[in-house]
Amino acid sequence: MYKAFLIKYAEIGLKGKNRHVFENILRDQVQYHLDKLGNFEVSREQGRIFVSCPDEYDYDETIEELQKVFGVAGICPVVVVDSTDWDTITEEALKYVDEFYQDKNFTFKVEAKRADKRYPITSPEMCRKLGESILYRFMDAGIKVDVHDPKVRIWVEVRNKSYIYSHIIPGPGGMPVGSGGKGMLLLSGGIDSPVAGYMIAKRGVAIEATYFHAPPYTSDRAKQKVVDLAKIISAYTGPIRLNIVNFTDIQLYIYEQCPHEQLTIIMRRYMMRIAEKLAKDSKCLGLITGESIGQVASQTMQSLVATNAVCTLPVYRPLIAFDKQDIVTISEKIKTYETSILPYEDCCTIFVAKHPVTHPVLSVIEQSETHLEERIEELVKEALDTVEVVQVG
Ligand code: ATP
Ligand code: MG
Image (spheres, rainbow, N blue to C red):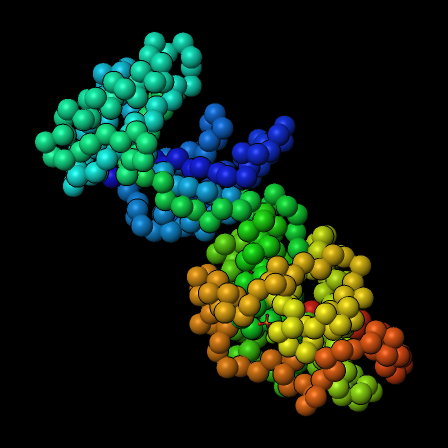
């Protein structure tokens, strides 16, 4: 049983002077995730994130949790040798190969590193010596050296202690959440928006969310579904503050006052306006939606011009060039799909026109909105004043 993990990170390694800031955020994120499971100590040492596991723990569950931490490129279960003595390291490495590779019919190469150049054996010498020791001990069992394309690379790092590992389990990649500010996700009960939130969070952005519901046209079950989706993605993004906006009166008013084929676009514009207000109040630096060019009438490039025109914050649309099937594949991977396809009504579909405009003209839409002048401000204020906040994750 491994008592420690070495965490490899990818892009943080490209950072310059502020690299330690990113490393600290990643360390905190790893600690936050593992705290859900038990007693783990996470530290940052010499440019690495190191997890030690003093107590009994569930290996599979731990790996699964680490695979949800953005910024983690690889997870290496590692044997820690409390010594830098070469003979001790050799013994431990032989024991490691013996125990962790039942079937020894594979090719290998030793990769060794010393942190301190004063260590008496150079890295190439360490590779050669340990390679020979392993080969001689296990060659009858089938092990062979291949320095060009080995099946297994056995890493040995000599620092203030020594570390042996050979197994790198892929992490999700990306940047640690919290390293990139905060964004406001427009979260519906559909397939796309949870995936969009996941993708932006993967770039290090913390997520807040807004959901528009229209009771009694949309049910409590539809609302609960959105809370459930927020909960599922919070396993990756960390805690999410979910704003639930009652959109009924605004929708009814638009329905009364505006041409029906423009309903969806005008509704979307009000959603964006309200989400942006909430975003600014919470110091979010952008809006996030699950839109994808051409997926539906309200997502043609012309429609996106009309929707986008009301926003001053940048709108991030990570799925903009994705086919539906590609989005579905991600939603299955992140486990939102089963919840997203539950058949509860959505406020957009209830008030949808039979023939929505697919090529709206911004000036025409703006003209239609003048029919809302009498009451819309008051209704938007009412919607903002009655936001219900649910803390998820
Ligand atoms: P999704 O699968 O994410 O619901 P969709 O394909 O149904 O997307 P639309 O209904 O046009 O597409 O919505 C486009 C985007 O607008 C969504 O991805 C989401 O970001 C936002 N959105 C739509 N409806 C709502 C809602 N009721 N509450 C919050 N955001 C919404
Ligand atoms: Mg939808």
